[in-house]
Amino acid sequence: MLYAPTTPAEKRANLRAALATGELLRLPGAFNPLSARLIQDKGFDGVYISGAVISADLGLPDIGMTTLTEVAGRAQQISRMTDLPSLVDADTGFGEPMNVARTVQTLEDAGVAGLHIEDQVNPKRCGHLDGKAVVDSDTAIKRIRAAVSARRDPNLLIMARTDIRALDGIGAAIDRAKQLVDAGADAIFPEAMADLSEFEAVRRAIDVPVLANMTEFGKSELFTTRQLADVGINIVIYPVSLLRLAMGAAERGLDTINAEGSLASRVPDMQTRARLYELLDYESYNAFDSSVFNFTV
Image (cartoon, rainbow, N blue to C red; front, side):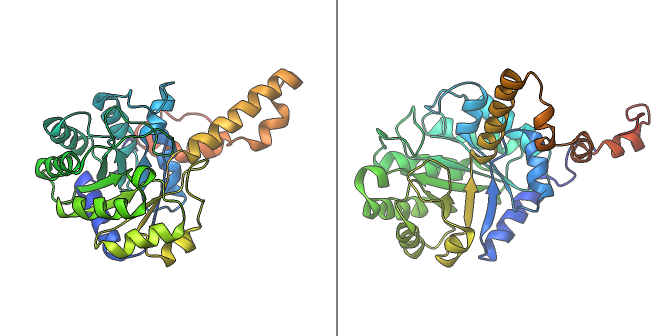
């Protein structure tokens, strides 16, 4: 009932323990708190909170228009509804090193298990769009050092994302990854790798966990979990997938109303009321107060 009983500290410790196994962790992107419940119910390892999804949910493009307050608010709403650890996209940290430090503590208070800070120029853009620009090594290192020094829970995962591959190639991405690890990053997110061999090259070059972004319509092929595990990847995210699936279904539903005058033909595709109530855990609310759940599903 209400929020997940697992505390943020426990979730962070659980994420660290899971990463220590060396097994591939699967983190689909939750576009709202209810979808986080569904991710947990389906047996995944964690929940990803995408900056692109938060932007899209607000009707905005992913070009650095969201604020720390907006991201932290949605991160809290999602994180508190699941026992799974959540990893949130913190963009460039929303400013200079002091802002990065504040971002880390604000997101830590929101209950996330980890976050990633990237090396794009602020304002940033989606990592799979052309025309990106990255900061110099010194600036990127200062961001990560500020993030690491600001956390209060040592189990909070500080991940560094680098977008430099799209500009200067895989060699530059590996060099930048090594610098970020030396700066204190607990894990590395190499964005927009061209093929599986590039993921493997990053994995061989560093000693911390590596994340693969399997976003649709992006620069990277959609590799299977088996392929990623075989080259040693530790985390795979599907950041926008559930939102795309949901919006695709919503668009087809609206088209059906226009074409048929009713959604009767679409009802078999819908989540049932009974399944929705199961995810919402109506019965626990009934045990707490029978006046809340006083009708038959």
